[in-house]
Image (cartoon, rainbow, N blue to C red; front, side, top):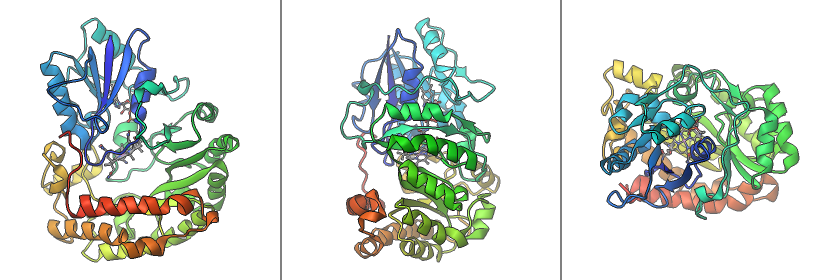
Length: 436
Ligand code: B12
């Protein structure tokens, strides 16, 4: 039996190996053969589908439209399709219209049964369980090289040490998928998995230093392995100097941080109580001193935002000398508290934006409060343009070797790439993904 796992792509996809594929492969019964098609590397021709006896597609909201097109094509060829992932977990009945089976939530403990049922021709339309699976005693994600044969992937293995998030940020999808209770993998298992992988690693955790005790335990296990890794951390943990020191010693070279906004009022409204803009610059300085590069993430379109928000945010990102920044338009992802509120308030301009052709061009998908949709979109573009302009790039660069690996060696190539992406994709609106 040949199972084809598919990661559909869209404009926001990156050359990162999907951990979901590694997890599914590890939970597949031995009698089946697994192949993976990454639609970003090899856009799937819908009239010449790669062979399969069973297809499993991983769906994010931004790839839902493409996922459904691929699913419909396989089903028209009478090949059964199973959909899973965060988007169909939020919208199972929407997914069911394009699948023989939908898996709601995490695949551990369900996927094995799905394959057995498919084998005997008895696929159920819906698979879900009452409780989140424990992350203890799970097989390690499969790193079979044949799953990701291309050299175009960013040379980093993705690893996860925990799931769930205790914070309830209004715009975030993580609670929908993984719940608010933290589920930790034993730190020893994480270290053992890392020992089998290459030197460069990306953690998929939403917050690698979620409690001080866990940070000490996990980062302490990682330190002797001499890895170089990037990940995400919330500002709550980064306020503590001892955590930053633990990060440095464990080999952290870069962090993706959700600053989101400089407005206390917007943060409170979004329930992101762990962020304090008055401390942002101190936190950044502490991380820079530890040689850790920062990729800051900011969101535009909160109810408190007016047209002055763009320049203010870029000025901060430049003053903080962030290595990179991502500016996003507030997006109502299905299942989030934000989606429910905007719907209640009658402010969703495209309620199922993920099903629209070129949804990125329609964004923002809602009516903002402090400006028009056009002002929001134009301000967002200008923020990218200003932050990745040549003058800003040079003023942010800290080339000394002691500033860390990413900052000294990779800063200019990364920023040159982001400059091009900004001008071609964000400003000029060119589309790159050919598989639509
Ligand atoms: C790593 C990561 C990325 C990476 C890599 C993604 C990749 N190649 O897999 C990069 C940097 C590329 C990325 C990009 C983006 N990301 Co991202 N990312 C994550 C992150 C932090 C971890 C994902 C992960 O690996 N999880 C671990 C795996 C094991 O979990 P999983 O994917 O959910 O899979 C499990 C189940 O869902 C299920 N499952 C999944 N697929 C399938 C398939 C089948 C057949 C079955 C049965 C089950 C199943 O079983 C799996 C095992 O339990 C998540 C946050 C999170 N906590 O999940 C955000 C997240 C997925 N990203 C998000 C977003 C918004 C984005 C971007 C839009 C950001 C941007 N503005 O550019 C882009 C969009 C990319 C795209 N094309 O859709 C949102 C998605 C919201 C949504 N509703 O879709 C999340 C949830 C973050 C958030 N806070 O809301 N991201």
